[in-house]
Length: 431
Image (cartoon, rainbow, N blue to C red; front, side, top):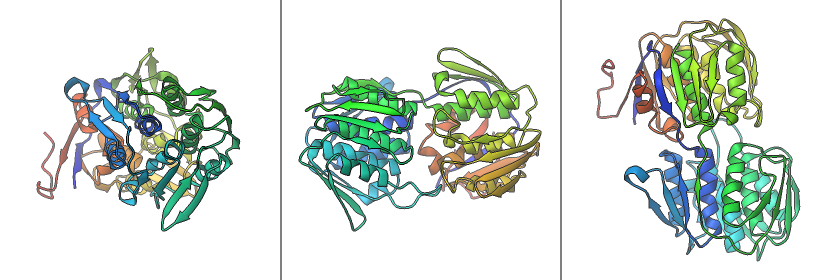
């Protein structure tokens, strides 16, 4: 099992380029199930979750072509013959977004069998809203032996009001509605940029969607969708992670290839703590030469502060003067990184869904354990400013959502390297 070895104390200087958004690419890959024609996706990040989805689609009978060389971030998905409209537990268990195939399969094939994903380290992620919505569209849904089975001769348009905002639920039912008979109105939808990106692809494929990116989405169903070419939007969470990294290390870092319009809440909080940033149309420069002051933060659905950057903000808060109160409103168990940060010297007290972080505290290197994708990122950020050499175990979590993070950070001055099990247990100092 790979580990990351990081020696802290170096400012990040230069330019780092953001990859395509994993959370936009995954539903766009699932959308390829809706047509017999090829769907070409560009700016696909090379991360573990993308490979899992490729494997999932291939297991159903899709032809998956990977680009190479300069086209290595392009994938062609051709789902002409779907011999097995099923998502098995062996694949779904590693990535909950696999349930995004449920809606497209029912809409295109008239049936789907998808494994329930099981537990999740950061909290409950039920798919009951997916199931309820499909039933409102006319599907017959049953659950048995850990699988959801849905059938429908053809889905029929309906008005669906989500009981609570759900990103994957919005995406799943949006895809299903494109091939439903009549008009579907989705209310209380997620407004994330990734939802709007999916709708942009679907409209290129011949769908008739209005309102994506707002709370109300209208879909006029069509009988058939065609192939299309689409470029995935930049990863706003990766961009936010690098913004915080540049600030924490006292660096001068340019985050290129991002969309500042998607980073409003993050940039706003950085300004509150005293971090200077400067944006262009497709980049943000962060200058970490100011002392930080504590500020409170609450995670919210977009356009609020993203839960996927909460752990990284907590790492930043350890270096701010004063007490910061961080409230997690999306997931009930997303403070597991706090205990690892405490082992590195942070002063953090957990009170239910609130964490009180008192800074500024010097961090010292330790052997720490990553519990989930974004927790991994927070430990990397803490290690970048810690005294000594930190070893982060279970970095397969970070590989799910960050493309070659150690290479990107090393290119801008971080002392970081990856080691595998063939290396001695006690890692040598980073050169």
